[in-house]
Image (tube, rainbow, N blue to C red; front, side):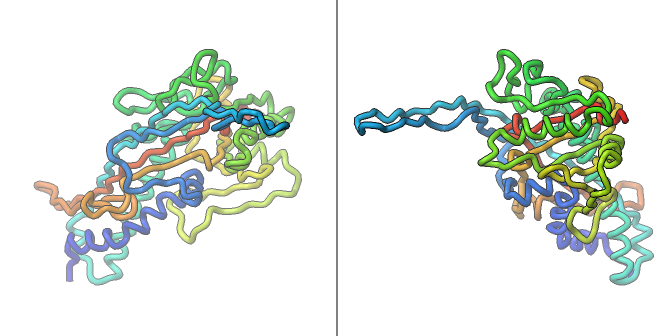
Length: 357
């Protein structure tokens, strides 16, 4: 017998928590944020999340020799407050009534789920990936981007996170705070290096930026653990290695769309990021190769989370079906409120020029 549009909706509600897990698992940055417990669900009370940025330590040290010394107190660090934006994103997709009318039983329902909702989820994921890597995610331009040459829209334009310049030359405003430059927020900058050619100084430049970022807050958050590179930079790195190359895959038994692969770099994993589109970059040699170096313990996500009153299961709300007037179509919607931010930029970096052999 035909499948009702409401049956599809019920199946989607049951699948929603798993979809939420898939959505984060197959992006290396989001996956690690979730694994570290740096995701705050059911917390978004508005489009912005405020967070503390600290430069220096939280106190002072006094050496005691005679016992009569006065112990120094007070706060020695400089603290500022940044803010991140979590856009409301709605992905709408249509299921033809003809497909529902001609379906029969659970097997046909599974085919419909795979053909429409799961392809929609994969496309939604790919748009978010494009936005994070390059700032060109179609329809998701309010989500933050790592690309310092791009801007994203959050009630006005906001600058991409990682600049392609030495710290003294970084003057953008990121997450509401002016970068250090010469007059900005102390400690609010990212590490940067430019490769002249991979054969000449590729790996040495990567090491320099890696260690510069890793030593920042190393005891609290460890070294840089994740690299994302464009295809040519990634392949140049592989070609420059000896035969000691180990390839691994992101965990899981299903992957939407593009499969992520990585190889070791020092204590980090280096992943090919196909969403890095070099035509979206222009400064500091970035149009000739981009390798992001991230300490994922300094990154955080926030969502609406699981709340039946707000139409959410997992990190998604799923709405529908809605009959499209004068068409044999039923519309369903994925609704996502999610933001991402970094609270210690100097523990992250970027290397450009890696696409030059």
